[in-house]
Length: 220
Image 1 (cartoon, rainbow, N blue to C red):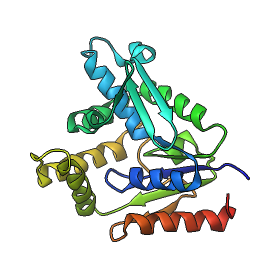
Image 2 (tube, rainbow, N blue to C red):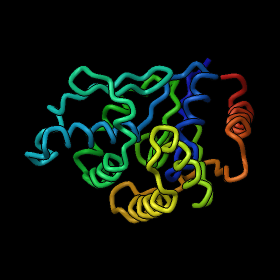
Image 3 (cartoon, rainbow, N blue to C red):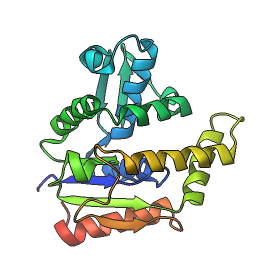
């Protein structure tokens, strides 16, 4: 059967990562988390003390990625997990995402990983820039309050000193930056299936995406 390229885009806190990971597992596809890749670049750049222009050290950041049931990020041979979710790293990743060299560097890696299909890739420009000819494109959204609540609860599980209003403000800032940047702004890709997940459970969202896949491609 044909191995599909499936993209899932949307703003921060829309549930892309959780849904994409489950969907990939159900389809036995590779899961590519582009956000983790950008955060990996941000983390590596920060560890190197930002001693040079990011453009000059992209090929020597000490980063490696593995794509299977989850996206694994390694810095100098050590796997990164919670480090990638720190607010400082997320904000630096957003800043670096405006850099053409960084985007091109990661786009090459993402296209190479997905060139044979059989992937679910999620991010903010996967259906508009990375794989504009993807077999299926989805755009997940939710209102700001709900997205902030989800991110707050995610962070709260890892540490106690989390403030909801701060999380909400950070998402608002990220939304503005992602939508207004000149390079690969956050948009609903042409031909994408739009889904508001505000009042949906993760299971309901996954089921809806699977339903759409079956409509278009049967049991691929």
